[in-house]
Image 1 (cartoon, rainbow, N blue to C red):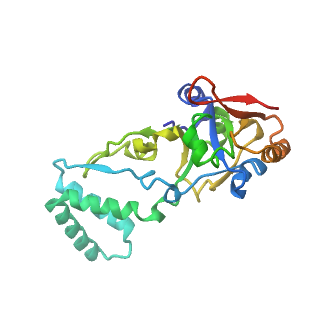
Image 2: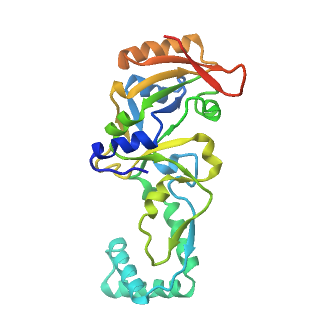
Length: 279
């Protein structure tokens, strides 16, 4: 994952660590999908709306260190003040002691419950936005699942140009089935960055690169626009009809006049696809 304040400082790093072109597989029969061309719009999804129930909220391996009770008490108190400002000082101290004793008796059970309460609360993720792309134009499962069974299209973006415009964290997804270590009452710095880009290997066929923001509702909307020069190409699926192709070409000429068009074709000597320029 790459996080930055000044894009020019990391433009070279992005170009070296990510594919030059990334793809969004779309279905022209879906009016929402059409806006990527007609309105030049991209959408940062709320994590709970994604099809992976662990997206941005992967499982933890709870590590129990020998923690300092007084440090733990202070952390619980500070957290309580922000979460329950309605409590009196006396009520807060009572709640702190109850929670502290629960942690001392069975820390793993306590933090597992806290974790589940957190990840199941959709509102906790309302400021997070995920924008996913595929690293390849010839990804067969993506054409089947997101490209309307090869009847749709894939729009290819210049990765660096798009990153410059979106100005948020960007990186390839880390496909790994190992739960992330969470140190109870310990140092968990760096954990959030890993959470946001960790997915099970069950999803690795998607070859995902994602843009991610935690500022939805503050300094970013879910819908974002992009300039025409951020788009390199549009690829039509194996089964995309000539009528649909012509509609997409006509719409693209209005908003993306310099884009190139290709048709996906099967290979004669191997599994997989090639692309042939059509206009």
